[in-house]
Length: 313
Ligand code: FDA
Image (cartoon, rainbow, N blue to C red; front, side):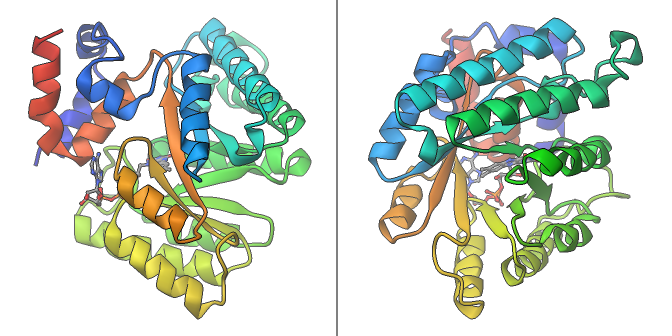
């Protein structure tokens, strides 16, 4: 019931400026975001890797309409990748990139053929830096208006960087077909349920329908030739994925589990200890507002905790 209003607030600039004054170190933010700087991200990476976990890092930011901001995001990823390589952490760390943070929404007037092309070139720049560091990039998926553009950028990037991965969202009606198209050898697909507010004509809005779609998509990916990245905290989905792995003779390392930083950390360690590849998604940076609101929408029970942090700031 609260999911819709919280997700609407996620895009409110007024609420964002009010809430963003809260320090990243305060309760609920710190539970989901380890810090604002490259050093914070590298420290969190090192700690998780010591516990046998892999990571993917997201320099927070989205929906930018400022070319300088998009350039700054590219620079932040390059700095991070160089630091991960320098500290010997890159083999078990990749990066996740939101195309709207690196220019996808820039207008035609920004030049270079507009937002789609700018995002492609910026993503190419990050892929090059990732390859130099010895690791890979996965493109995050945002709301359904961006899916075609994101998958088209993925196709372009894969010509030079075939290791580039993408995210598909089970809540969208189109996703089972997208899974079929991407279940080929060498293809890395992160399957999640979907975190955005979507209209009924393009998405399942009922939780049971989303879960059923997740299972159908999982079946396609686990039966396929690609590398499925099972991004969920849902115990049932983890169990179904494990059964599908046995059914298709997939051993750990031919697929992986993924969860978000701070969510079900004991389960993350349990899966890693059981020999699974378990990757933790680490968001960092100052632009944590939209990310945090999506997490609150998934778990509105955390709302009281959040409001308490706001009042005591
Ligand atoms: P669901 O929300 O049904 O929760 C299942 C169970 O998990 C809950 O009962 C609870 O026990 C636990 N849980 C879930 N959320 C919790 C929380 N916030 N706090 C505490 N416990 C919680 N989405 C997107 O649209 N585009 C993207 O690119 C990505 N990328 C991405 C990467 C990775 C690695 C992950 C794990 C997730 C994403 N997502 C995403 C988010 C995803 O779409 C989805 O919104 C969340 O993962 C929550 O869905 P679950 O599958 O966990 O199930």
